[in-house]
Length: 409
Length: 91
Image 1 (cartoon, rainbow over the protein chains, first blue to last red):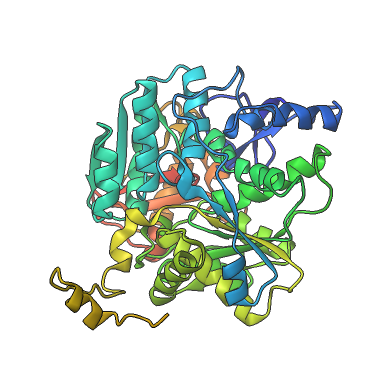
Image 2 (image 1 turned 120 degrees about the horizontal axis):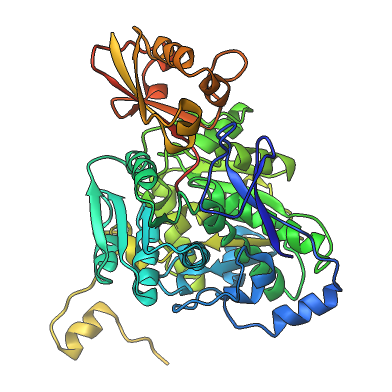
């Protein structure tokens, strides 16, 4: 299924597969378009199954000219059946797509893998990004592995763990006095003036965004080539959310799986919920907001793909909900104590939204639900500070017994 | 009021290669109208039929998104800088 062009999602104008991201006619976003192969689906399936255990096994559905490769293999993360979580929520069948298992512990390794591979094909010499943290980690790591210099631009008030984990790779870190949307605006200006730089989420955005489709492909394959009934996933810019649905649709169109795109439920933090607000208001106009939430990785107040995310939730019979900071902390806790997976605040948003949907009765007992847990709790460690107690005692058995009385056997 | 409008790379071809334009106006909307008068091709790129901005066009006054101000009615002062950028980026 070779990529044949970049196409404007608004006016359908096509462009060659270069480093461009916006339609010159109407300013709409460009997306990679493909020619659907006419090959035998079972042959395609065998080719996928014989591929490497990383996202390149889906090379047929990715926008690269040559054989894809990367120095830091990414993807093929576990799909964990979360029976204890399902039981707590009164649901039938719940799975967690555990993206903490990627090289830099978030799904951003996927999008960076594709953007970097395409950037190398196009001859770029520097990797850069505007980031809320996880992307900074991924860009720094993949650039280091590929031997390219990296520039990451971040809001100045990002979690320290994310800054430290980026600096460790030797990236140039630029902290901007402003929020993510200010960083994004600056990067959009800078990218126009630095021809050798591949800003993964700006001039490489059409390629970058394609990486998120692999979440859907892996989910289908890990479910034994079946579709889930429902996806619950986070929304920041809305890119991942819409690309997951596109991934399912492409597998359906290619004849690899039959059925329909799952119900798509989006999750936002109440302190930055322009897409949920648009959904609730029955419009696709996402009025920008100034973020104020502990879920900093979702703190995009001006979501570029917001209108498409709203449309997708509506057409699949889903919704876009928002949860507050206390619910986010409870979501982190709920996932950790029922599955052993410690997620960052964005995952807390997703699990809290899953809990909200369950409580509201939106999810049937017979549904197979997959929740996208996109990042690792160690990166937002402050979110769990003071949520539990540590018992401190002298190094004596009596003291231990005094705290934890032996149980008669 | 003399205002500078900075153009993104995607619009420069339609503006004869200019990276910015110096225009007169008392609001952001008037400044953009003056810009369209200088470079007629820019109007259909940036604006919808009714004169409002297309949905993937962001306009900033001194770095602030005009949707946080008074939109196209936001007053401008002499020497202000208006920046036009595509909304399509990020996350």
